[in-house]
Image (tube, rainbow, N blue to C red; front, top):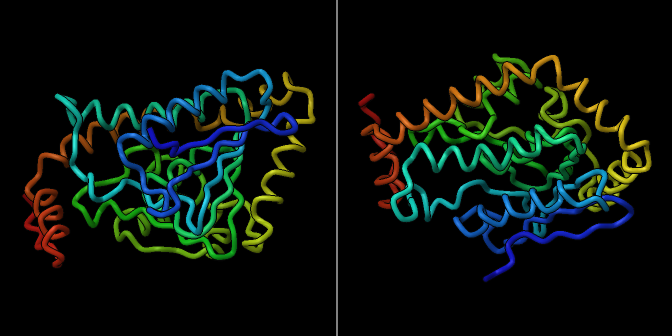
Length: 259
């Protein structure tokens, strides 16, 4: 099997790398499985006190591989397909280990939601961020509606979520969607240095600090992510979603009818 996700430990930092650069690290089914496996490996690895999620190539992650849009394996339901993706991100959110994301190039849809599941986001100055699911008759389903609202507020989240517009790194930093922006050639070094700095601190205090900082909004966000699951399960059954997939295949603009 192709290794779409790699994992290594350096200076007590567990480094998880998205490794499908020829496809902008777009997530297909095999890669999705590997993401979950590597997250669990890293979170349970006693050598790693902090995790760094990064990507090979020019882009962090283009989200779901659109060539597999709507694809389900075996008899998997839409509900369980979304639930599995949510559980991957929730493992990062819920675990005591801090997580840093290093974001370059395009971070789109579910790709950016991986970064949102991290505790801190460092972006390169060429980063482009979007939540474009609305263009496919869908909505974000692995946390963006909740995590992004907590960071930038509901109104700005609606601008992104209800239009699918792309924002650049500078705007993302102004709004608070990312925590710092650095030159592209410095991204990996800056993000690793931050993760290593945290990893050098007392691990019990490190874990408790993350839990305290998350306490204000954690319960509400989990409830909201559950609502995402229900909403997306409904949207997968709409005519507008079918039309979006057909238009994508036929390389034309979709004609949405609200059905």
